Length: 442
Image (cartoon, rainbow, N blue to C red):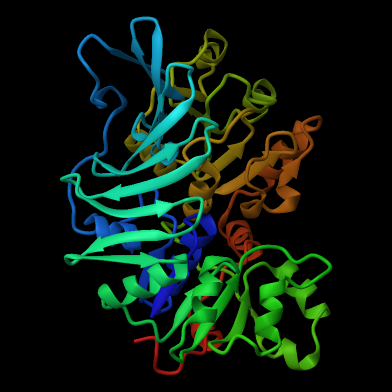
């Protein structure tokens, strides 16, 4: 069985986790590979470039090779390469790492236009390069092994791909043709393909000549009309795909309203199985992660919740304004925290307040949800509504309602369980009941 995703995002990760927890443990293939796929996922590019069994560390921003006398300057957001006063390149970080880990380097010509991008992987070496024309349109992307042997060349204008493999050169007209070759060379069992996109993943299933049992997992919304490729499935024109699973309740209800009774038999609803890292201990320990000193109604909350301890942490140094909150006996401040520090703080606390203005850091809301922390937010600061009960989002003009909510929930077990149910938490038994693959999921 293959779990085939066009790209890696939170929905793909959640689906893969849910399938694995339910016993559907086939190979997870991601079509768009940025070089930082999790260890349990692969791609045709990882396979042909030899990244699947590699080792090494990602490259830190000041480790990018440059000529003598050039210099690298960096901030928390990106870095730059300079030859005296001339900017030669821009270094972009891998955002998920929350560190200055190199993902891409855009090299500039004399006019300051990007002409080449070096793509680094999680092992610290360049696995691909994208080349641009004088109008900065991407025209070629070339993939290589660690020892710089060129194995794949994608013509981004024509869509053709050239592969040097096993002493032969192959030309593929479409991405699907490359995938079919990869499936066979990698020895993958494609009798069942579970996919979550109506783009390349669907087309890979649609045009595959061999018979099989495939499933579309739909993770987007449904508007007033049925997406065209989904309609092919519902009309019985996609021979391998006989089942559609919708993963958002509203989208499922909307789609069912558009279908005939016969078509509706092909469609099922399934949420996700989320990681359950620990049970709440109902401690009066509150965590806030922030990248700024703008924390809505912090003064009020600290003064009204004197029986609670506030743990406020930042990835950087804190401003004097925020440091002044250290005068309160129930406030603890943490500057320049590491990922390990953040993990410790999440373990210490059972309540998360999503009240910081600006960006969310360290995927805090999702982490708090997995740790079974009670999550409360203001309407002006909420970052991830998927994991917060609607009645736990309060008007920033009425912080007293947030205070009342906290004071009324001394035992958090029931409310945290409700938080999970409203996020469409599923069981492995329900997954096994809904997913129909016969004997092909071994």
